[in-house]
Length: 289
Image (tube, rainbow, N blue to C red; front, side, top):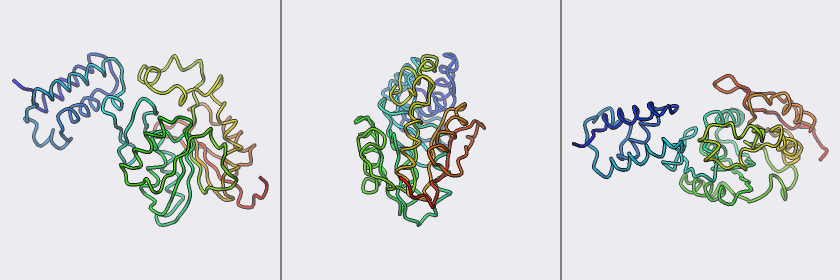
């Protein structure tokens, strides 16, 4: 007898719980929805709908992969972030809710119909910049990444979201090749995990996410040392920046941006009350390069 949607969800949840995996309720639901071509509403309104043999086989494959600690985002090839759905591959970081702090900060600074330019350094899947562009129709942006594979994912996401004409993508090493004072907003989620900490991370991250997007050098701060002066260089006077940090990097990163000439530098906490995003502006009276 075929599993129903409700039975499939319950059995999937039990299997993930038995494997000691985090978030079994949500992960099970997402995989059942994908395998059975169903929605959350379907599980509630039509819980006794049977799965086909093919759908059951697909779900079994998903669960086996999750038991091997493959991220659900990689299994399904997609991940929701802010208010958009993104294609995700092993070539990019899986977008995380903590990073939405950057999106929220930028949107609060720019009214909906105001035109502005935004630069996303280390664009990855495009999660940050596409979430902002989706809500600010007059804005345009540039995403830079050292990885050609990551740029291909960002390009696909921009096309899927109807924003290909508003997002330019460039393969490059941070700001190399960019002119001065060109952007109203600069955002970044750079690699910030200390090298010797990488092997202690959960398998979903350590074994499945791109090392180049994680490794921040011996103390996790290598990229901020370069980014702080470069971000201030490419910002227009009065422009704003927002960069994600590790939970224990607030003082060091604030100091780097203040030393580089940042104005009103401070840190926003995430929903778990961890220090998460260092923000600031370029002095509107700034004239030196």
